[in-house]
Length: 276
Image (cartoon, rainbow, N blue to C red; front, side):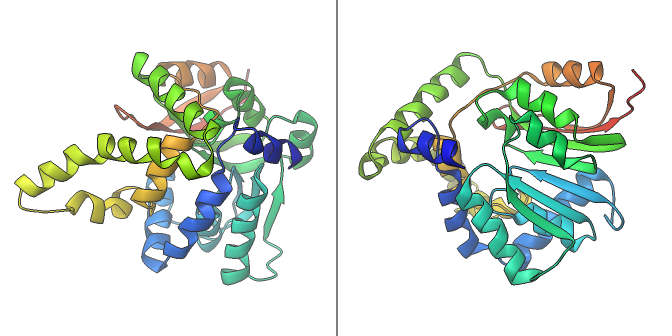
């Protein structure tokens, strides 16, 4: 969409779609199976046959594809035109011309657009809503998309106080720099995040083990692409897990699954019981 392209141009938004485009070259059957497994485990469902699945912020399209392979009728939405192109590319590769998978540009902050989408059995938005620039509004809008007794699967950055505030400054600075100079922030951040882990792996006698096994424990993702996403991911908001829980409790949700992390995203699966 035009607003996303303009925000990227002036340095107010990270090029998420460009990063996902580069991720696709590493996508293989093993990563697809890992993505499917993460969905099945979190949702506690071995099949999505007969379910409708909305992917809000589809990014690379990996999880839209995983849901479709598990049998769901899928609707993929993203603000970033390149992310939409990535998702369309995966549809072309694996489900060409499939009427059970719709891919489109859309803005979760546009309530008139949200109302047109209808409701879904499963609404999935992993690591997306905190990048909208209006996280709580986005969370409220997503609520309108979940059918009664439907499932909501989201991941939101953990609020680490001063540390999160510092990372927000890093992210903003990264996006304001010309592309040719972004390595000045990217590589020091890489060393900060990965050097201690690699040293520990060496002392354990398993060099690069964490890096090599990253995709198997992180939903089929790429360690380098996730690192670039982390450093550049802006806009950037955070929330404590209890804030997310209380927000959704007030909206009639019951928490089914929670994974908390000291850094990165806390993961939530809720069931909606709209008897307010």
